[in-house]
Image (cartoon, rainbow, N blue to C red; front, top):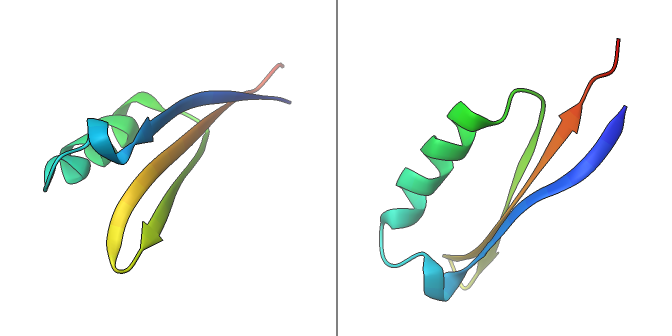
Length: 56
């Protein structure tokens, strides 16, 4: 298994409720991996997504 840093999005790139759309898009794009939300004072400030590539 190879773990690659897929995308990191900062708060200034994700305005208001746009983070929900971004998460939805990432869920459709990532086949294997994880999405991590960084929350500060009840506000999403960062989204980290990593995709795993499975070698058979």
